[in-house]
Length: 266
Image (tube, rainbow, N blue to C red; front, top):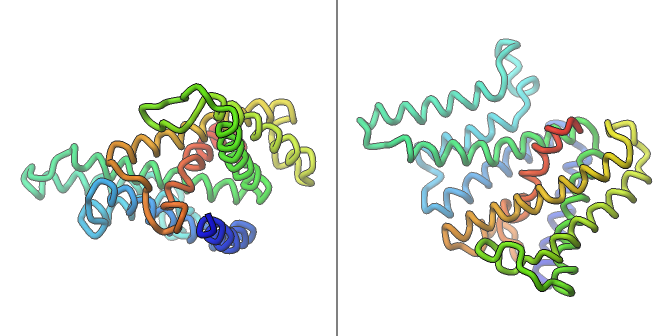
């Protein structure tokens, strides 16, 4: 427990200034986190990141994360990040030809979906901060409140399993408690924040979509649990002592941020 607290305190001391400053600092940080996320998925699968598909998968994630206008300004105006990402897909598929079918499309599929999963999530993490610090804080508070509420309420009142085949410790009561906690925290945050104009919806609508974000975040957590169960690993990595890996900490957010973008919050 002490190790977890120390790790969390140190991580927050590094993380909060980065998200507060924003700009190229958060973009670089997100790109690094994306590469670590790709590494963790490759590690779980038993593949080397220092390989043909590993390098391209990491590169693809970075090309999704770094904003084109700042980092690839020299490209034609209509070029975008997804076209850059697709270049890595084309090279991966070219491996089928170069290897004379020793490298297959099934093998190419894993690095592609890894890049998309990690890259799009952190891309929208950066986009949320570009819209405003409070928009990013709102997302973080919703996910953190969901996690904390689900843990404590599930521990106290949890009886019915939510999805035992994937995550045997999660309960329906805990899940509902997480949603309730997220709504309460969102209500306080949205009421007290001085930058309400950054949110495109009125308070009642924001509380309703907070429920959606809380559910999506929990689903992202279950997806990561399913991946780890498939590869028979306890944590995605060891970079955060007592907390596991980057994907263990960002699994919910990697799902929530793209859905926030879909809802037009940034």
